[in-house]
Length: 349
Image (tube, rainbow, N blue to C red; front, top):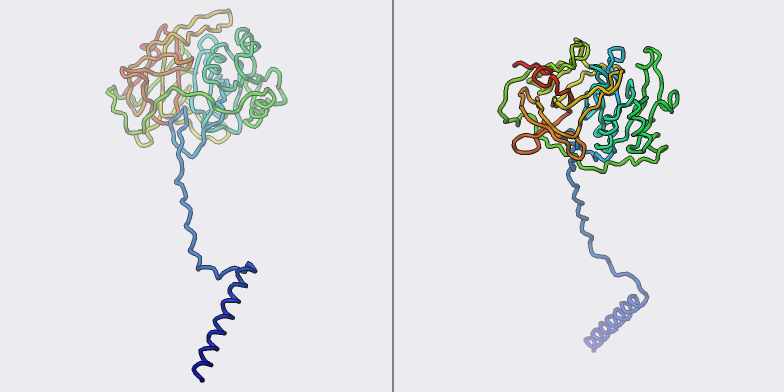
C-alpha cells in the first residue's frame, strides 16, 4: 500500500513540474542562458603607408591636399627665405637677365609662413597649371597678368591683397618683404572657390636611398651658375652619411630664416632649354615643352640624361624611360641652352 502511495506522490510531483514548465514558456519567461563565450577581439589593421607623389617618401598620409606653388624671391636682400625647407620640389629659373627666382612646390607638407613672395612670370604660371597647383605670387609681368586674368590657374596675388592676406615684414624693404601664411593660402582657396584636393598623377619615379646602381661619375661637389654673377651661383655638397646634398648660394648656406634649418635635398636636376630676352628689363621667354639635355645628381653620382615635358611637367628621362629619382626633395635648375650645361655646371668627386 505504501509503495502505491509513494508512486502516486512521484506522479503528482512530475505533473506539477510539467504544468510549471509549460506555464513559464507560455508566460514568455526566458530560459536560463547558456554561458556566454568571450567575444573575439577585432583585428587591428596595420598602418597603411601612402606615398607622397612628388618625393616618393612613404608616410601615414594621406597625401591628398592640392599642391601649392609659390614664387619665392631669390635676391640677396631676400635671403634667407622662409618655407623652402618644406617644399617637395623647387624650380629655379631666370626672372630677368641672370637673376633667378624660385617656384616652390608644396604637397606633402606645408610651412607656416612662405616668403618673401615675388612677382610671376608667364612660365611660372604655365608650370603651376601643369602641376594643377594653387598659384601664389605678388605681382606679375604683363604676359603673366594676361594668363592670370584668363583664369588658366586658380591663384591669389599680393597686388590685390597686400596688407590683408599678404603681410609685410618690418626687417626688410619692399619688394623683398611680402609673406603669406599657409592658413591664408587655405583661406584664399575658399575665397576663389578653388578645389583643395589633389587630383592628378605625378609622373615621377623613385627609388630608396642606397639603390642607385646607375653608372656615372662621382659628383660630391656641384656648382650651377646663371651668368657671371656669383651671388646667383648655387653650390651643393654631398654628405655620404645622410645621402643628401646641402645647398649654398653666394657663399652662404641656404637655410630657413625662422628655424635656421638647412636645405638638404636628395636630387639636383639640371635641364637646359632655349631662353630669349623679350624686353628691356631682361625678362625671358623660356621653352618648357621641347625637352633637351639634362644632368641628374643623386647619391653622389651624376647621370647624363635628357628631359621631356609630360602634360607640362618636367620629367627626367634615361635610356629606360623615366629616370628614377632618389626618395626625397628635388631642386630643379632650368638654365639657358646657351652657353648650356657644359659651361653652367661644374662638378667634382
